[in-house]
Length: 500
Image (cartoon, rainbow, N blue to C red; front, side, top):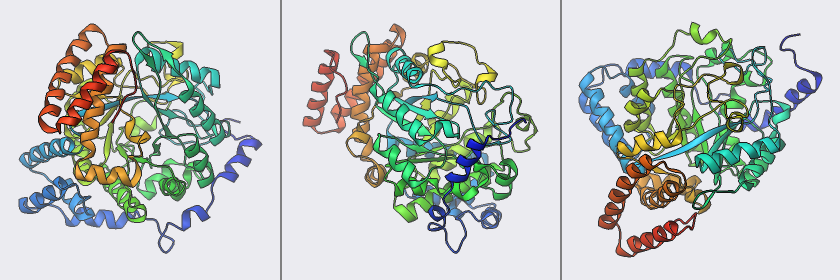
């Protein structure tokens, strides 16, 4: 029967959730999302006066997480001139914490088998039009060789369905395989240096296994923070129907010793203002219980997917103007966090919103299973979770970023030097991490330009490098500048992976 689980799948589903790993983080049996409280705060902070908004802006500029009433006030701004000011402040905060760099990555989908049946997802188990597949380790290696050796990516986010065939053991094997890839390029070598994961909620023991094989950031989206909507969209009896098991997965990851966690909501499932508040509450609870907020926040919008009529039926579609507001308010509300803008969005939108707080974006993106080594060029609905808005190459995206004045950073040094977890939080809040990032962005950008760039992109990139090196000379100590030049020359001579 369509969508019915096998006995093996049912047995696995029954074994996954461990209630004792949830309740210890809850207060009096309640989670930290109070729907009524969120709506009450949104309603009582309507029509905020300009003095209050200016106080909130000042707090954000001091890189302090906002209180719920403060974020609610921002969400209730109606005056266009005040929104313009908010957009400008978001730019300023991003520059203060992260300088003018943009980190790039690529998603690598390893499997689309899933035991869940989420109404909005192309990979839901009852969707018969999707071609189901799980990549073997040799196939994973081929995908990583294309990404690292031909395109030039240094970091990936690896994506899996929730299924016994893609359990923690399989995920650990794929991460080892990806890290093992090393491909010769025209001047050096290509290698993936950071493997982040977008995977299902897991137990502490499974997360420890992934920590031990070198998992990067552990990313899980709550999808929607609204309890009633969550229940409606995730059918009873599926793993994903358990709201709290998902909500507290980042807490379990930090307990397991994973350095960095990432949160997000899928905008278009419920009211966007509520979801922004949910993201703030999530960040604040992680800070409260661990002293560490989210390493990144994502805010994808619903996109078309094969045989998924819910997407067309939603009443909560987010306009482009409201999407800009979402990004700006998140930047002010959780000012230290990285913010990820994905290729779900078309190039025109990405150009418009990138300056107001974005720190990471993907490029050369393919989300079909095995799509990079298969080398198909058109999007194929029956192989993808959803359709992309921007399929430009990494080279094209980097050229545009350079023309906009941004340096593309391929740096992964902070993770390998221990600038993660609570350590990175301190550096981000004080603006000191931007110094390391600037130095390492220059070195990794030099490396990428020499190994992968087209002549047009290399020319645009050279202009950015010249400007960045001049800024370092003017702002940083002479010994740091001289060390940078030494590393820079060594990279030009063919050395790779030098960093501060």
